[in-house]
Image 1: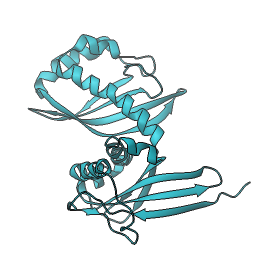
Image 2: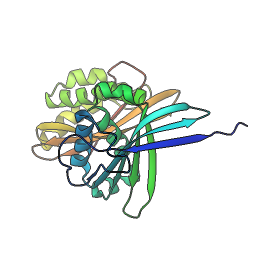
Image 3: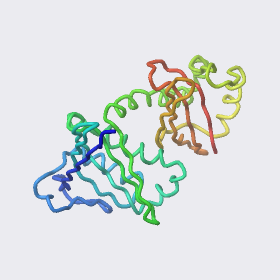
Image 4: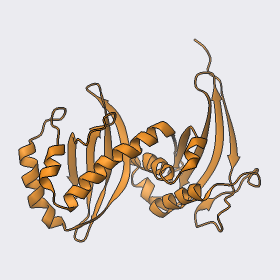
Length: 245
């Protein structure tokens, strides 16, 4: 079996966008050589605004005999109570951090092969995750299914929502779900916004399912919300829709 060699080069960053916000670390041995763009800085700002804590970031290049050379942007988060509370489902904060950074990028997307996320808990447990740019690009398109679902709920377009339901993979009664939603929705109040928590890709019955999790912010009572969809489809179909108070 061939031995896999891996070499990693890191360049720590110094932003060109004014003062640091609390928790943001930009300095390093080579910080005077590289700066990040306004869009990249906006991504870091959004992550810190969502999770708080401490953020360090860098650009790196990895090379291996199996994968070739890859350039990445690495984001390391620590000292965040919000992240620590979600470590039982660590795929949520890790994917959310990568996605929130990615969606702020424009031309910069072509500069990287992947976004690396490093999470350090308060007990110093370190976990690392890699998100290819191609996966995040696809995820951005499919997250629109969750956004449309929330929009239909907000506008009380229940019949149109019913047309999106697909119970072929996961058995549920479509005829029962919509009346329950009609009864339940007024108790929670009007929808103000959808707040993404993250996503996970799993394989079930030869399909790649994308589980999208978030919260619906309301004027009475917020609720957690998730949908399962076909990651490789262009259709706006829901295999599962769940609420949690």
